Image (cartoon, rainbow, N blue to C red; front, side, top):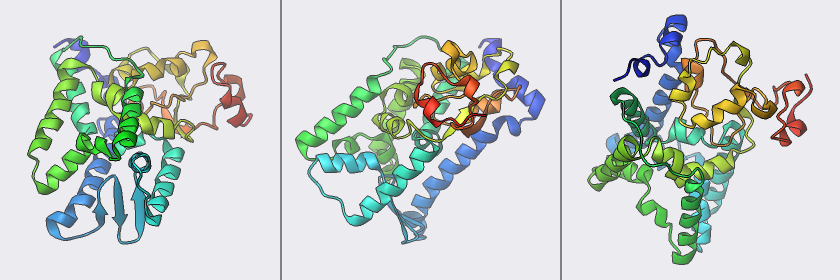
Length: 303
């Protein structure tokens, strides 16, 4: 184990304290566990807070929520959803268009802790290398799942979706679900760094498209204070998105606009200089409008 790998976030802990340096990580874990338990206490204990799963659910017999990716596959497969499903998908789309589509990946998806654990172990064990997957691989996988749904008339992806298999496994007994979850873990640990969530999962690809113009963003009001410690790069699940905003590449604004950002908040946690924080895409000063993103000029109010 190399010394630098063990010191990631050490400056932030020294400056802000352990709790503040892990605030967003802890909130994410609490949210992920809370959402999962809300689904499980029904079949486990008969306390039906939420009925269904992450594809379609009915909360307190009042609030319908529908996964738009699942509904799209159903439509392509020739199935016409019921009215409640349309209401549910409208609510979900509105929410993720506001806060960022890939917030699902970092704040809701129960597979995220599995891949985060694999990433942490890679750093601790000093595992390097692995295959390099194209950034567009997940979009090809997304496209293939939609084509299969169209050709077969089924939501075929649900046969392999680790999230659905884990959910069913926790209710009915994990069985083969263990194999799928373990395969995802080993893939990220030994084969490709952050491979599943970052390069393969079609769910993440879909939600990155949904949240492309989302309002909530990670902003960098103090990017000039950056001391190049690289801790943010080490913990970011999509580290390539940091450099443009942090280093003003091609005049980029101090805001992460990349649709693959998961709004996980880890860059905020580990930065001892408080370079990062949550904000909105409308907070960017006009003087910092990105030359590479002309759509920003239409949305940003002059300061």
